[in-house]
Picture 1 (cartoon, helix red, strand yellow):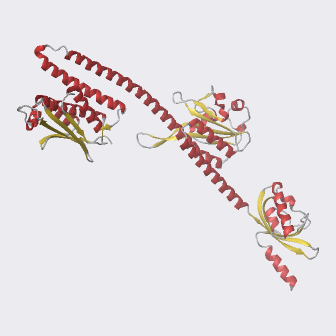
Picture 2 (picture 1 turned 120 degrees about the vertical axis):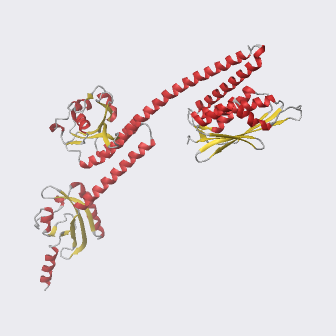
Picture 3 (picture 1 turned 90 degrees about the vertical axis):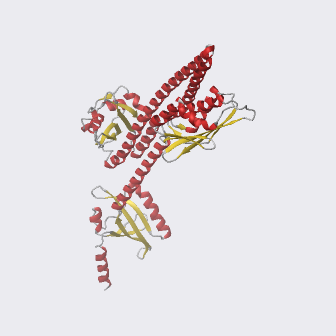
Length: 526
């Protein structure tokens, strides 16, 4: 009965897809029994004359196994290890070996009752997962480096050094297409060896670099000796023999007039190694998104440099124009002041009045130009324009008069073109009221400008209040005549035309406790 049970148990064990064994736990670990599955899993015959399974084990893994066996022998604890073994056909497989330590009643020692599982597939998955995590970590590092620096050459050097360490290669080059000639030149190479390629130009289609750039396709060369596209001059230039290569086009998407995206090749990224069959499809999947990122960075760097150069040129031209305009306006103002002193006695009052008007307007133009120049002709606050024009006009026209000015603060912006037109309007209004104040001297003049904005429009209420001082003699001044006088003036016609035509706005006049001129126009500055 006992023999039948043992036979049944053995038959059952030898049907499951694992290797079972019994081995002595000692110096030689001699096998007492190994199940027939050793033939199907490892290719060896299950013969009991196999006295040591150590010959199966991959030599690098044996020290850890020996340490685990020694610990089991010393403590009686179960044995467990994962290690590589050599299949009979030469392949390396992974085994999970688990065994229980039991007394050997016949020889007063200990035995291992163990089971071996084939975990090769699991190890491949673990390796693939580890590889993918490392790739993602590398790409994340690349992204962070692109974010934290603007030195493109330095950052590419650091990134490609990381990539070469990850792929265990030490050679790379980046070739870019010269926009003017269409030729490829070496822009960057490992250890700054691009100087060795300084005079080396490649046409599209020439060599492997030219082929990849022309066809816009990545290439993996397992052995350069069997590929006619490889140019042996690389060996001389790099000082070593290149055997395998991975070349990827650097491309970006380009949008044409039909809004279809077309690839545009900027150059080629090339990795090289001195061993045959070094690169595979997994390496290509890592390098391709990196190549796209590099291409975008190179294109952005070119655009940035172009914008910077354009900005410098524009700034230089603006500086020169500002200098010329300021000089011209200063010269005109000087000439007008000189002419003012030469007026003939018969026409002095009329002549000086004309000159004062011209001087005031030119002062206003100079003030606006100064503000816009300081803002590099970008949108400017309406408050700054109104304040500068009013005070500039008062200083040029009536600096000694009894005048107070109030302007409500505002951060609302207007464009440079609106600023020029608005300056003319404010200047003409201020000159008109200063003249009215002169005619009724002594009069206390109060100017109050309330800036008004909403979602679509911007403007201001120009309020004027004139009162006779207590020492003023009787005269015919009537503040209610201001609206009529303004409407009848040539200045008002010019103001109205500028507001309606140039600013596409509206102007209205009415009398409250003070005279009010309401001006509104469309907001254009954001």
